[in-house]
Structures are given as structure tokens and as C-alpha cells.
Length: 206
Image (spheres, helix red, strand yellow):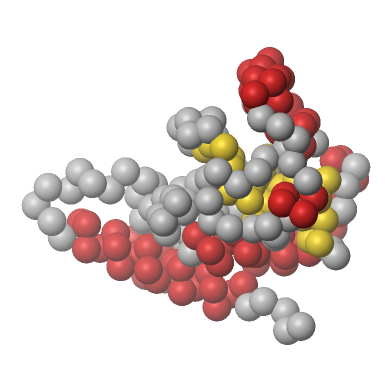
């Protein structure tokens, strides 16, 4: 299988966001842009990302976490070490800031969320669990939250997670997890998640 072209994908994404920003700025009432300001430098360059992480840096944080990060996520980090918060896209953390959800968020509410979910929802089979559709009502195994790696900031209780307990070759399952809904949209891989939401409208058609 050909390697996914992250540079082309992210350049295209950058251009779409910049075009949306310029259009919003041209309106008399510039109040519907709720995300990070797009600096003149970024408009000129056509690029919203950051310098990429080196293999040595990624490896150092794999050692810190005690895990080998999935291939598509590593390839993303090598192009841009994180991503700003723009329309319907949570701010992706640089690799030195990612960590277990239990460490970055309140362990008590996570435990309570797991307890309530397991109290009311029957366990799901592998056959049902491994079906991936863009649906907030997908079967969920909340016990995986104990092992999930948080890769984004928490924005109004929406979080991007990587789940090392479900693997597809060198990839991990990726979640858009929401405590507001509550539930998650699950994807086979980080790459699949990024391609599906296109970094622009992650909750459309849910």
C-alpha cells in the first residue's frame, strides 16, 4: 500500500481553512470565527502546521509512555508536531504533551463515566465492535479509556484519543470522544479519522 501523503493533505487543509478565514474577515461582523487567529505569516505561507518532530524526539516520548506510537500518527508528527485549533478541529498536542487520558484529565470522572456506562450498557462482541461507521452510537468499550492516549486538548469535553488496546497491523484505533453526547466516533486508524473529518467538520452527518 502506498504511504499516505500527509504533506499534500495538510497543505490542502491549510488552504481551505485560510480561505474560510479570509472570507470571514471580509464580513462586516467578524464574530463567527471562534478559533485561533490565522496570522499574516500563515496566510502568506499557506501553511498552518508547525515544524515536524524528529524520529529521536518521537522515540523518546514512546519510551516515556512505554508504547510504540502508531505509524500514521508518527508520520503526521514528522510533518507537523501538533496542529492548531481551527474550524471543528481540536488542537492536536505536540508529542511532548501527549499522555494517558488518566493523567491529563480527571481520573475520578473517567472512572464514574466507565461505571455508569457499564452499569447500563451490555458488553459488545468483537464482531460488532470492529464495525466502523461514522456514528456517535457505535458500540463502545469504556474500559479502554484507562489505557487511551490523549492527543488533543479538551475542547468543551471533546477529545481525540488513540486506543492501544485495538490494533490493526501497526495502527491503533482512534476516537473522537465526547462527554457531552456522550459517546465516541471510532476509526480504525488516526489517518482514517483525519481523512474522515477532513479537519473541517468532525460532527457532520453524525
